Length: 355
Ligand code: G3I
Image (cartoon, rainbow, N blue to C red; front, side, top):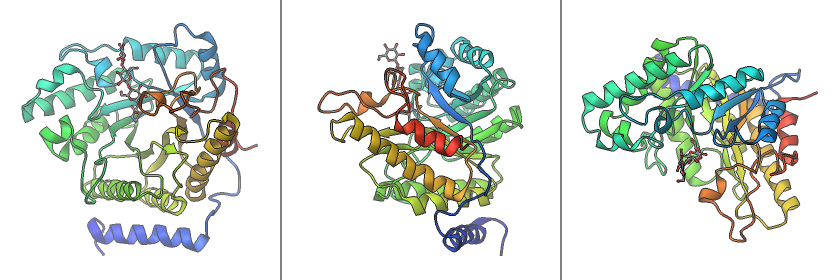
C-alpha cells in the first residue's frame, strides 16, 4: 500500500469507520473528563462602549477571535497600507484578561477590500497573498497561537469531491492557493496552529454530506502533498431545523485525528429562525441541536477548542441573513441579550468544563 494518495486515504477512512462502528457511538474517547478551551468571536465595534459585554467575555471565555477586524478588509484597506490597530486592541484585551487569541482569516473569498476587485494578474495575486500572510502572521507571531489560514475553500453546492469555491484566490491561482497560503504561514511561524476552516458539513442534508465529502477529500489531498496543515476547523453554524449527521461527523472527526490533525469547533451557533416564537422552546431546541452535534464530535475525539460565533444574542450576525418572519430577535448563542446564560451555555459547559 502506498503511503500517500488513494490507497492511504482508503485505509484511513476504513480505519476510521471501523473504529467508530466497533466501539459503537457514543464511544467515550477517554475515561477521565478533561477541560476543553471555550471561546467566542468578539465584535470589536462594541467592545469600547459595552463594559458589561467585555466583562462577560473575560468571565466566560478562555479564547477570543476577531469576528471581523483581522480580515483583509480591515487589515489592508489599501494595497500598501496595513492597519493592525483594531486587532492589536483585541490582543491587548486578551492579554489583560489572560485569554488566548485565534486569528481569522488569512485567505477567503469574502471580506476582501474593494481595491482587490481590480486584481487580475496571477503574479500579482501570488505576491499579494504571500506578502499579506508574511506581514500579518509576523505581526501577531507572539500573540496569536492559531490561524484560520484558509477559510471556506469548498463550493457551496459541490458537484464533485474536488469542487472548490470560486473567489479571488482560486480564480487567479487555482487550487494551489491553498498550498501557498499554508506553506507561507508555516514558513513565517512554524509553531503556530494552521487551520483549514469550513461550514455546512454538519447535517444529514444532501448538500452538507457532499460538502463534508469534498472537504475530507481536499484535506487528504493536501496532506498527501505534505502541505503543513495542523488542524481542521468545523465552523458549526447549525440549523435547529436540520438533523445532525452524528455518525458522519464522528467518522469525519476520527478520520481527521487519524491524519494527525487537531479538530476545532470554530464558529458554533444555532440558527433558530424557522423555530416557533416561544423563547423557552427555542432555547431548548437550540441547546438540543448543539448537544447532538457536540455529542457526535466528543464521541470520536476531544476537540482542541469549542468556539461560538459570538457570546451573546445581543451581538450576532444571524439576523443579517436570517431575520425571523415574526420579527423576534434570533437566539443562537450561549448568553441572551441581557448576558444571562441559556441552556446552550449549559451544553457547552457539559462538554468543555466537565466537573
Ligand atoms: O464596517 C462596516 C460599517 O462601516 C458599515 O456601516 C456596516 C453597514 O454596511 O457594515 C460594516 O461592515 C460589515 C461587517 O460585518 C461589520 O459589521 C460588513 O458589511 C458585513 O459584511 C460583515 O459581515 C461579517 C461577515 O462575516 C463578512 O465578513 C459578519 O459580521 C461576520 O459574523 C461573518 O462571519 C463569518 C466568518 O467570518 C466566516 N464563517 C461564516 C461567518 C458568518 O457569516
